Length: 147
Image 1: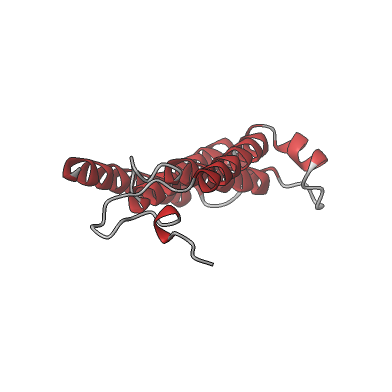
Image 2: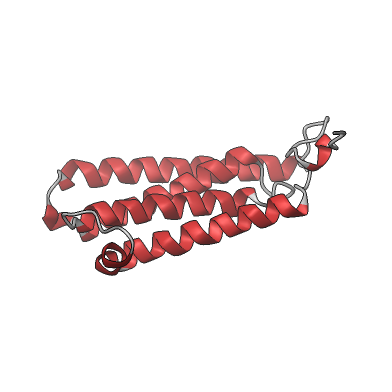
């Protein structure tokens, strides 16, 4: 088949980032847009999302908020990862996961009266979100300085 592997990899022989083939970037960006759109819809309008998409009874707004938060995180990872010439995979994964985790914390704050253990859940989840974002930012700075 003779596929040129350099067009489908995210790092060259020297470890530097290589732009993905155009179609790969398009698929990645379309995926990012879909995850972000559906994730924001679920998070910001859980009843509407449930009524139109996730019609699995019983309705649980916190579960729909969680679904939205994690979809936003996946969308953020894809959006960041679509540009490996600007941001490496580890930074994209950490920052995207941190975004999803931060939205998850917001959901726990919004749903504080729906159950769970807010006194421990919110601080623990906040620490995880902050750790991922700080580590992602540190990785971004580390790899940007090397280029």
